[in-house]
Every structure is written in C-alpha cells, then in structure tokens.
Image (cartoon, rainbow, N blue to C red):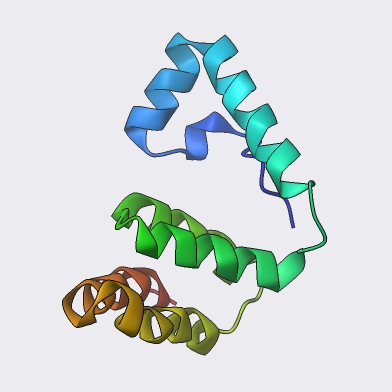
Length: 111
C-alpha cells in the first residue's frame, strides 16, 4: 500500500502548489509520512481504514477524500469505508459522522 504521492500533479491544488514552490518542504513531509507508515505492524487495508478514521476525527474533508480515493484504488470495500463513518458516531457525534459519510459517498457514488 503506497502512502507516498509519486506525482504531485495528483494532489489538490493547494498541496500541489506547495510541492512545486517548496519541494524541500514537500520532500521532508513525504519522508515523515513514509517513516510513520513503516514504524509499526499495521498495513494494508487496516492502515487505510485507520488513516480514514483519523481524517474523519480531524474533520478534514480533503483528507477523507484522499484516503477514500486511495482505498478504492486499493480495492477496499466501500461498505468498510462507510462503516468507519458509523463507528465515528459515538466518538465525534452524529452530525459530524454524517458529514464524513457524505464525504465518503462523494467518491463511492462516482464508481
């Protein structure tokens, strides 16, 4: 499961602009992400679902979209992605979890 973005043109415009204007900052950020990803035993679908849950908990629509997009590319079942939103209900609250569900469905419904 690759966590590193190989082509910065695939990034949302703000991140892509940062990568183009400050490649040294982007490279350090990417290296940190890789080191964190490789620091423990979680991998594959489990790691993608954890990262989606963290994005959901931080209420970051862009990060949710990013992790859903990558999960779908990696063959993760859309129902597993939706389950993450349901698991968030008691922790982040019903309205926020429903927002996360709509962000997930933004991409799942495109398929």
